[in-house]
Amino acid sequence: MLLPASILAVCDGNLCRSPFAEGYLRRQLELAGQTSDCFSRGIIAPAGHPSPPEAIATAAEWGVDLAAHRAQPLLTPDLDRAGIVLVMSPNQRAYLARWRPTAYGKVFLLANGEEIPDPMGKSEQHYREIYSRVAQACDDWLRRFGLPPIKPGNH
Image (cartoon, rainbow, N blue to C red; front, side, top):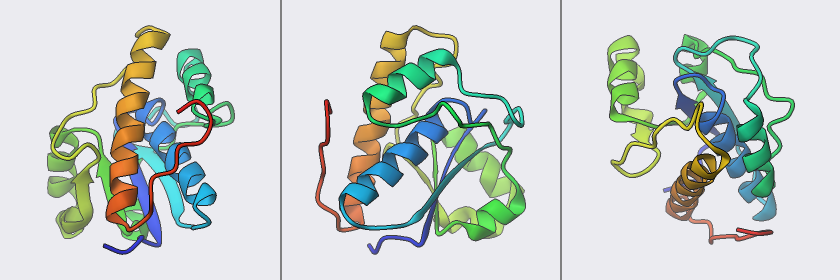
């Protein structure tokens, strides 16, 4: 599979999981000398809201800066722009299939059939566990795109 020109990560609120996936993918691609338009949106995103402090602190441990991130709701043009859409749950995939059936063929679960639960409101340790799963799933996708795994920094 070739690296898509654009990768859209989607979760519910666009506060924790999808912005981390966006930032992690972008960073890994930069480290590999590759580029793709990585962006994220939320199905029920509270437009303009920042990521919670736990998300910002935990993402920083992975070299991902969420301090300036603001939630953005998913719109039809976002699905049209994306070469591939990576969602966190089967329910999100089913929702997108109903909302935009023409995009269904490019919508996949980030974690190969497994749901990645929302860490919102949980401890930083819970965020670490979830972000570890997100990073592993992103690495798996990057391998599918033909890129070797890159393990910078602490992870």
